[in-house]
Image (cartoon, helix red, strand yellow):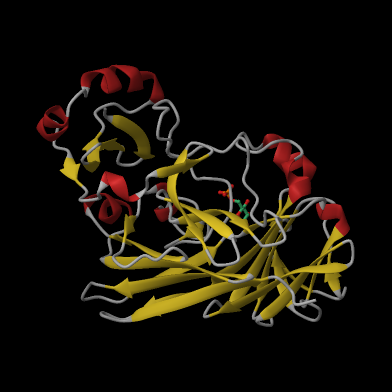
Length: 346
Ligand SMILES: O=P(O)(O)OC[C@H]1O[C@H](O)[C@H](O)[C@@H](O)[C@@H]1O
């Protein structure tokens, strides 16, 4: 069976997957309305090749499980803690700690590549830890939050039950969007009581290039109105809801009652999420210079098609990010940043 997924808008490509692997297929149409004839036309890999399809070299059998129809793989550790990482975007979409709590928010209405439903496009997955690279948000000229969150990643050798590395390299499609040779890796490690996610980028070209990035973590909370984020007092932030005006955080805690969209500049490396006044999760970052805190609030949530209206009550994005100063990589140079999420020790 051949499954097609929407891939990118300009130029328009499809990702196709069959039992042999993933293929990149140039789309001949320019809109959704022509999608069905196109799907009907491509019924075999030979036809994909005839259309100029490119074998992406990704074994289809690396991601043998699904969660909410999203293909991926699960990790588990000796405490019975579990995580699920999707093939699309190398995205952690679930992390269950030993206390039985789900720590990642997963929108019930999210899109994304599905194993069984060809009608669902590879929109970004609104869940867990989307990887934004090589651009954060709309602060640049390419697609919002970059393109790697919409793409299938490849499993690296040597995965263990509790750790996996995935990577993505530039190809003709990525260079058409962003003309640079790169290698990016995401590492996910499930330590007891702790999830560590790393993002690495390597400049594979002979010219310097720069990027902004984020691990756009959607933390799950019971009721965000009863949650608070501590550790950002006296840190300046750009307020993205007010034309990025710079404000000093005076309150000891960040609280949510409506839309909040802030880039905290040079924050401390350790923050604490509290629920009902009780420490719930320690959030650390390394290598990333900024921290983004985002919640759409009720009005924006209602306007997001891939997000339940009440979804804003159950999530808080605390993102390890490089936003204010792009990271510049010389030819051959690499960069790594990490976010570490830990259950507080009682
Ligand atoms: O809806 P998305 O493209 O996933 O972006 C979701 C959000 O990401 C970041 O947190 C930005 O600061 C927000 O401005 C943006 O709305």
